Image 1 (tube, helix red, strand yellow):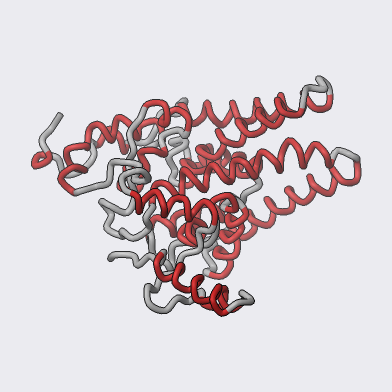
Image 2 (cartoon, one colour):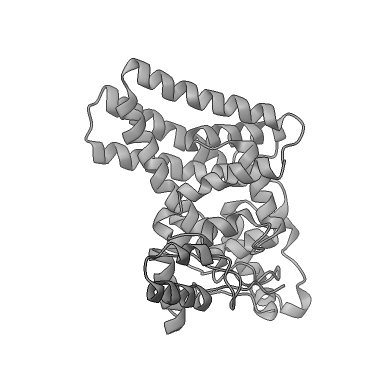
Amino acid sequence: MPHASALRSVPRRFVAPPAPWNPTVGLFFSGYLLAAITVWGWFVGQWPLYLLVALGFLALHLEGTVIHDACHQAAHPNRFCNAVMGHGAALLLGFSFPVFTRVHLMHHAHVNDPRNDPDHIVSTFGPLWLIAPRFFYHEFYFFRRRLWRRHELLEWALARGLFLTIVISAALHGFLPFIFNCWFAPALMVGVTLGLFFDYLPHRPFTERNRWRNARVYPGSLMNLLIMGQNYHLVHHLWPSIPWFEYKPAYEATRPLLDAKGSPQRLGIYESRKDLLNFLYDIFLGIRSHRRNRSRLRPIAGLLPSRRWRRHTLALLHRTAISPIR
């Protein structure tokens, strides 16, 4: 292992384009195969609902990594194939590939910036059990910031048109129960998973904006398999062109450098009583101000019927406020 003084960045082999046939391509086709099996199991096999929901969840979970790597041009070396994989994964997830790409790149450019990081809102403006619906903020952010380029607005319209066509056809032809049970329900579960492992855990406590400390690593082979490398999220932020299946070896190659930079390399939830209490707060309430002395969320306290409740709510907002460090 090279010494930190001799290592300035990740070895070049990790940032090279992936091979045409790589694990991300496998995830893409596996996700569609599982989705097809789910369709067959509902309409032909009459399989039990719990099994169909599990298959649907796994299909969408795999595609979550595909769309993420595709938006960084790391899913396939051919740009057309990369785009096909991105749009295909987005279709199953109920996302729009241009929206996901532009909003996610803004997240990379403004990590933990309360004004400009779209994922900061997703992570800090409500309880973790409601993190999935907050992903709709991405679409609002996309249009508010006018992020589209070239034909991306047309791509968004076509994707949303196809989504609505599927749902309307389901309503007209009597298979809406399949859509809700085997697509929307697993999508909601995957939304919680993505929000937790792509947004919340890697960036908490949401105060650092230094590129070496604005995300974290919590090493582990099992987690690396279950969430496809997102426990090495800092590696991704430092070198976004690295595909997910190279995160772990890239981390192992650069660990001395990360040690020297003071990069967080633990989960950071159980290290102190304060960390644990903050995590529990985020599970059940999770609304965080960015001003420690005068919260912009005062209107929330104003809705409460008792002056005492309002005072305690304001005190809680002030104690749980986060002020990002530049």
